[in-house]
Image 1: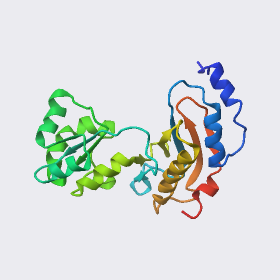
Image 2: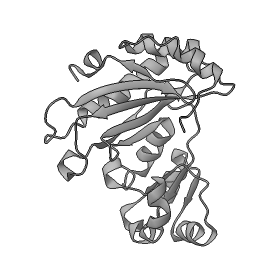
Image 3: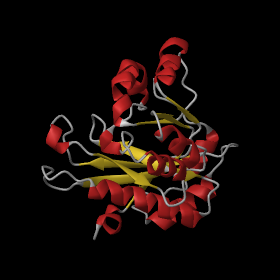
Length: 234
């Protein structure tokens, strides 16, 4: 059965013209047609010309959004010794060693949005890989969350560091802020996200890398963007 959209959604969709928009136009239109009574998340969706089945066409990385995500990120640091003080001083919400792993394992505790671990603690963190992995919370050296520079990792996550990775269909999705943000902040965040994805292009990707870019909010229709000006000279 086809999903029927409500009247408000259809009214919003009717204002999206069948053409490619510039990013500033699209963000302004999103803010004009909003109808939900909560502060929606604004998302960027990119269709890439890669086949993620092949390891050399995998696209993943991180980007610190210039204006953050508009939400407080609760950071758990699993470390030992002097690094415990360093994590606390940098503003981590929860800091500890092996006992934090036990708490996740035995109590099913998951009141955090990101996990950072020092390399020496990864043998303990591995025990909860099956719990953290599917939720995208497993620390990873590639995304800077397994590191000796704990303070920097905490500050970046608190500042709005976003992780992205291509899905099975060759698409990448990312949040770039809240609909209540000033338009220019959303534009700058979206640009930073798109450019990070472009910079993460694997050498093995052939043909056109960015096939399409769409911007939307939680409840809104998608607005198609003109990818050329957003992906040139990156």
